[in-house]
Structure formats: C-alpha cells, structure tokens
Image (cartoon, rainbow, N blue to C red; front, side):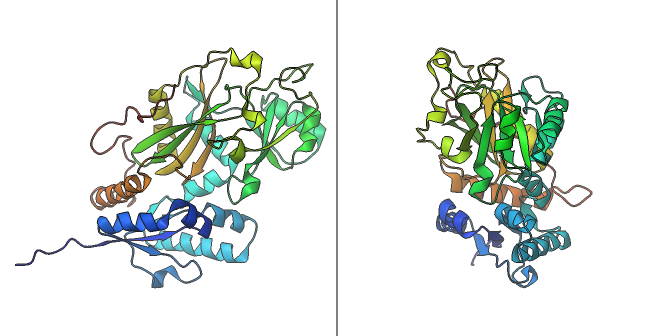
Length: 364
C-alpha cells in the first residue's frame, strides 16, 4: 500500500533582479524542495489571480514601493495589484504584511513608530528627529529647536529604500550646514557610539546580531570638530551609510580619533537586543527585519537608528534553512491559530523549541 504524500505548500515570491542575485534564489529553491515547498516566481506585470493559488507570498517589494512613490506607472500598477490581491485573499499569508513594509519605507513614519513604542522604555530609545521640508534656514532652526534635535545632526533621505540614494547622508555640525543637505529630509540627532554598529537580523522567531563598523564620534561646539575629528565646524560630512558600515570598510569616517580610543565602550546585552526585537516585531507585525542599534557612549543606552524590511542577512549562518523554517512555522501556525479578523496571532519571540535568550554571537 502506497502512503499518501503530504500536500505541497505553494509559495509565490517576488524579488527584483538585484535581490534575486544577491540573496541566492537557487539555493532557497533547493532548500524549499527538500521541505516539500514549491516556489513560484510572481509576474508582477500579469494578474496574480491567474498565477495561483498560493498558500503564502514571500516578497521584497521595498524598491517597487519606492518607484511607485515616484509615480512610475508600472510600479504603481504592480503595487496596486498586490495590495488588491492580499485584500481579496486573506487566506494567503503574506511575509511580510504590506502596511509594515510601507511604513518602513518612510523614515519619518518609522521614527514616529519607534518613538511611540519606546516611550516607556528606560534602556532603549530612538534619537530625536524632525522633518525638514525646505531649505529655509530660519524655519529649519525653529523646527530643530521645537523637536529638541541637537547638533551634530544626521540628515537622511525621506525614503529608506529603492536605491543607492537612500543611503546618501550628511553629518551637519551647525545650523548653516543644513543648507548642504538635500531637502526634504529627516534630521536626527547624532549620538556618539564608539564607531560600533549592531545589526540585528530577524528571521521570525529567531534573530542574530552582527557587529559592524560605524561612524566615528563627532562633536559640536564653538570649535566644532577642529583638532578632534579633523573636520572644521563648517564642513558637512557626506557619506554613504552602506559603505561606511560594510564588514571590511576602512573608511576614515569609521576610524576613532585618539581621544576616543581611550574610552571603555559599554558591553552590549543580548537580553536588551531580545527586547528590541520583540517590541519592533510586535509593532510592525513583521518577520523579516533588519534593526540597526548603537550603544550610546555616555549613557550605555541603546539607540535604534534604522529599521529595514527583508535585509541582506549578510554574515548570518544557514540563512536559507532559517527562512524555510519560518515559512513552515508560519504555515503551520496560521492554519491552526486565527483571531477574529482572520489574521494569525503575533508570534511569541522564541523559537518553537526553546527561548531565544542569546543570538550566539559575541557582542563584546
């Protein structure tokens, strides 16, 4: 007697060509086949209704949303089609839900969310920020003061995805330096953190921390950075955040000055990282996240400076296995647990087998 085979899970996926190449879709397909999961690449130029049915959709549509914000007609059409499909098919689980992805695309909305969820936290915060809509210096001075944003300031593009320009930023040391920034932008207080960035890579109920280089310490004041950071007060520092924080980056911007090398940096606590992951995942109802965290040199507090949807997972071990574990976990869970609105309940932030108390990566 032949045993009946379990029904195959069909997962529709869409990444742009760059993500497909960088992420390694062929490896993902191979791991899925071993777990009886069929991956079907979505054609965003054809009706999704004709391409299913699907049990789940896995996507990275950040760049597509960014293009839609720029009124690209093909992107607008594709985004609208995906939104309509997800609305008409609540039985199809989406990794990740589109409202969270849209929110993370816009830095102002991201920081507003972080500010809200962290308002009662004692150890974790997001640096103060404000939207600067124009290059009017006097108006910007008022906005910065009202928001208690202090110099040095990092000026960031409004959009956090969609291409290289999303990573082009400026460190500004005084009011006049704001004129060097492309507006509109989000201006955020820069906090010194010893040139160490902690990247939290979240894959559903598990997470990993990877330590990367970051911007050196900067100081504002009468003498600005002259004699301390080799930049004068009037010199705005232009940088690409991706390049500065690459694992092998040797940028002068991430090399501490002698006066700062003597500092004993606070040791990062994995329990606080776990708390951060829990708060952000619950607020966004998302599984695939990159959370950038720095530890403030003067206070030891944890500052969340960026959150991204479906990051690169660079340096994360066995990432495809973890991702497919997540697909299976979500399929099993959403087939059993439904709330009154038809959506899966948020996961508790532990692996199915044991609590996630430590990522296993040395943060010292």
